[in-house]
Image: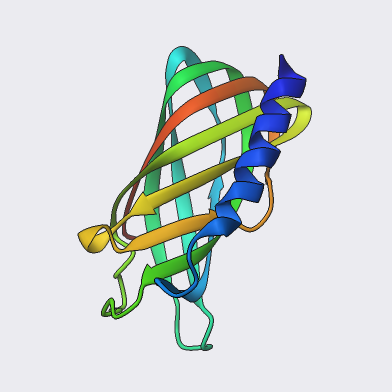
Length: 157
């Protein structure tokens, strides 16, 4: 079962690179960290702290976030780090906290001491942003999860 989840996560990460380049522009990188959580079989929730680093070197932004998974989620995780390339629909105006909002997509995770996963999610202001995993996330714990991820980002501070 864990092997299938890891394979699904790798396939999800590979598919995430298929966004049409002519419709999206790369804005930078979003890195989120969590202290972990416990899966409640059908749902789980983790609080996140995220930092956005623009590709053009301009000042970034810090976000507080929460990610909720609906689907299969069994076990518990420790520290987790997720890194995404941030893409925006061509012509989308970008302000300091433009990434604030709600995102939804597919996620798959598996851990046995150390594990990983991938989440491809889209949303934000006017549903103009896509978060593509640049690598499989790294997490600690004993966990198997597959389902729909709902991420909410808000300006921190």
